[in-house]
Every structure is written in C-alpha cells, then in structure tokens.
Amino acid sequence: MDITTLQYFLAVAKTGSFSRASVVLGMAQPSLSRQIRKLEIELQNELFYRHGRGVTLTDAGEHLRATAETVMSLLGQVERDLVEAGSMPRRAVTLGVPPSIGATLCSPVALRYAEAAPESRLRIREGFSSTLSDWIEEGTLDVAVMYDTARDRNLNAAPLLLEDLFLIQNIAMASEAEVQLEDLRNLPIVAPAPENGLRRVVDRAAALGGFSLNVVMEVDSVPALRQLAGAGVGAAILPFGAVHREVRMGRLSARRIACSDMRALLVAATPLNRPISSSARLLLRIIHSEALNFVSKGVLRGTVDCNFNTARQDPHTDVDLNEEE
Image (cartoon, rainbow, N blue to C red; front, top):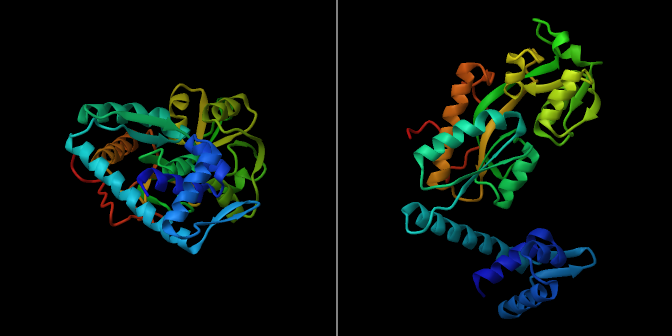
C-alpha cells in the first residue's frame, strides 16, 4: 500500500463509482479496478460493496477512508510546512471571489499580496458562492470570499461584513427613498439561479414577508444583471459594491432595501478539514483589511462590528484576521 493507491481509493470512495473516479484520476477504469482489488487482497478485506448504481463503502472501507484522509491531510501539511520554510519552490495560493465584488476586491488584494509575499504566487478564480464552496471542498481553493455559508458545514467562515442589499434599476426610476420589503411584491426582478448565495438570501427574506419574488429572468452573470436592470427588463437586487461604478457615473439607481432579513453575510472561508498555510493566513489578513477600507470609502455598505452567529471557527486553524501583518 502506498500514497498513490490511497489516492485511488479515496477517489472511488468520493465519487461512488469506478467509472467516475477513473475520469477524475485520468486513468483507465480496468487499471483502477485492479489497483483497488490488489489493495483489498493486501488488507484482506472487501472495501466496497459493488452494485448496479456504483459502489458504497463497507465497514472496513469506512475505517480506511478515515485513516487515509488523515494521512493525506498530514502529508499535505508537511508539504506546506516545507514550502513555507523555503526548502521547496513556493506553491500558489488560490483565492475564489464572487462576481458581485470580484472587480472591486481583486486588484487591491492582489497588489498588496504581491508586495507582501513576492516569492509566492496568487491565483484568483471567480464563481458564485455555491461553486466556490464546492471548489474549497475539492481542494481547488485555499481561501474564498463568499456569501451565505449556513449550509456549508465543511467550511471555516470568518465574517467580513453583513452587507445591505440594494434595488438596482434604470436611472430614470431613481428615487431618494429606501425600498421596503413590501415594495418588491409585484416588481419584475432579474436574478441569478436559486442556488446562488445572494438569491437564497433574497428568496428567504421574501418568504418571511409572505410572498415570492416575481422573477422574470434568471441570469448567472452580474454584468448581465446590471445591463438588464439598466435596460428596464427588471430590477436587480445586489450589494452596492457590485454597482458602485455605474451609480457614480449616473448609469444606474441603487436604493437600499430597508429590511433586516435582506442582508447578506460576506465571509472569508477556508477548508475545515485541512490545515491553513501561513501564506493563506497572510491573504486572509489582506482581504479583511481591504474589506474594511472599502467600507470606509462607501464602496461596500453594511455592518462590520456585529456578532455573526453563523460564523464557525475551527480551533485547529487559529485564524485571527486582526493579527498584525
């Protein structure tokens, strides 16, 4: 039994299928099946129940999975420690951001990180919160700035900001008045798909108000939502940071929705089941600092100093976003 064989085993356990695991691993299915069978013979235990829908773990398989995940986590930490100690080339740190704040946050964070850690390389990927959550679990991301993590039990979420949400409309519909929740009852709305983090917040607030939103179009693109709102197809509901440039240039109207339920928790998330590197810690501190900076400038709008009950911290990660750089 070696590390590669354990990786094969974990891939089959995660996908529940030899065929899907072979695609993920980039190897032929018969070869993968032989490797797993050799492992079962070596351990003198069946690790999987084979059936028409795929495979499920036996009791022995469950035990091996727990042990293998611990081993892989420890090996990953050894590698990260060596990287941080400078005995290996620095690995890239990968950050995920949602489209609503990506254009605002990415450049200043990237510039500060490059200045603070010139020997490290930062990668930035954009995706909606549901996608970012999946990427963190898969190990694709080290850190993600995302919304609405109440359902994501495998993430360690450090609160950044409880963002107010704004009704985004054509400038001709501009008004100084705040929007009440009831004002949204019959209003045509353009919105992302229901699994999107912001959409879940908005749908939940409307449901608490006793109605469902009149969504006339679903678009998983913040630039498209801005364009559709500007064209009068429907109003969008977004944080101010997603439209601050358009509002400043007089292209869109943004009115705050005066409803305590119509707010989105913005967090910096890391994997709960993997140790965090010092490079990722540095990135977290920079993100926190830049978020506060944008709040002070009015680009991001919401509540910073409050008790976020949805945040979860893992004592093993010991992340302190207020730690001095």
